[in-house]
Length: 260
Length: 315
Image (tube, rainbow over all chains, first blue to last red; front, top):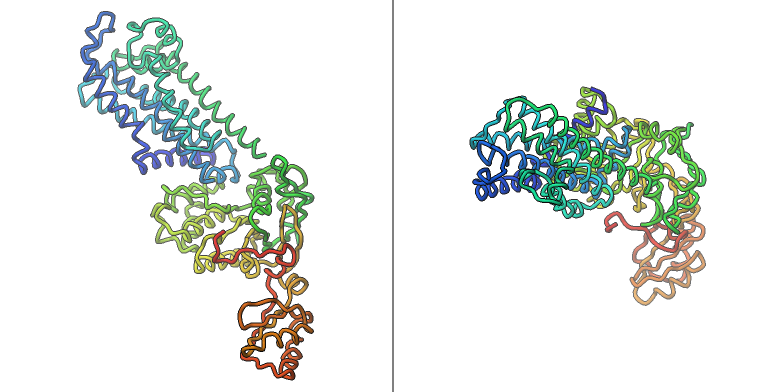
């Protein structure tokens, strides 16, 4: 392992430790999606009988990928907040004064957020199976969902990191993440695209989160892995990643220039 | 002796404010150089430029011959930095932090583990190695911060106000460590508001005020040149006036509300016997006497007309 990869790995582990050692940081990743899951499956459990609803064994099987996606996107909140605290406490200076590429501070944090998002997806998959969800595509599908969740978390983590680096204030990170819900509700994350009305349906069709949600839902509802849906999901992840991670690296560069 | 730190005309402007305004500096290998000055004098800004954390507006700065802008990577490999505000993650343990810092300085896993254990032992942190930073005292955090700055065996160590906010015992421990590091060949550049710290540690001091170095030299030379030996005598009741008028021949008599009459001796300590003799001849009854050697505070006062902080005072 190169020195750079080792630092990225240690920073990723650090992110997980931070989340576990400050349980309130896990609330957006675990607690909030759990509440959503319970509320939605409880209140809308009969939704699959609606005309136009895609055939599913149970509403839980439809809803769980959306909950995993919610957890993955919200993993950016504790990750971004922790990075903002690094800025506030000058801990970021440790990375900037070390003989390492300076971008490693961002890369390590994004890897950490991705790891937290992946672990959250494992927790929800296990919870889903425990409550009767049928994972049609087996371990391969589960692995695909975990990878997609991790990459989505890292991408959204980039947005959190960008806000953290640009403002240096944790409150700005936490305050800006209700916007995540807007993006999720304008996608097929919680509702089948077939039931959306325009302009919502049109927006959802072009929303990368729809592609990711469908890519996560496929392995649960169908045996095997559909190549086209999976490629679209990775395309969605790529869009989120380019925008998120790109913003974070630009924010770091601007910060270095501002202090340069 | 080779030059560890060199600056020429180093400037840094923030908006219309010149935080550092033409600093010329040469620190030799193996030297402890203390940068003295009040808050806002430009100490931290200078350190941030020398450690590649801030780009100079103009001027030149090199560390061991490497330019801080053009060869920033090489500079970072040679230096260790402990900034003014202890930069630690409160949720991590000293062991984890040192492991991460070792990786940041490209030490192999085994090398980092050995170095980590050495530093924990050396800085008296071994018993607290697995506690979270939030559970450590201020002194322990400062020592951990110092340990992290040492992980890469720096050739040049920058310490920005290393003992600010520490209790006297922790401060002495940090001083002892700095001395030991220097004895092993590390060049130390430290900033401080505490004259006692500079006097105790530094081979040379530079006074910075308003972004400029106003005076530089060894503590002894500066005290000899700029400071004055003070004679303090306590006299019997009603004799303060007589004592003050007799002692005025030896230097400036400073006002005092107490029984003590204080004179800044123009000719230094050799004038003490003559001063005592004239008091005796004038039938002034001296009940106590005290000779105070010049301090760096005298030097600072003569430069700025103001005092710097005492180590116990809040920064």
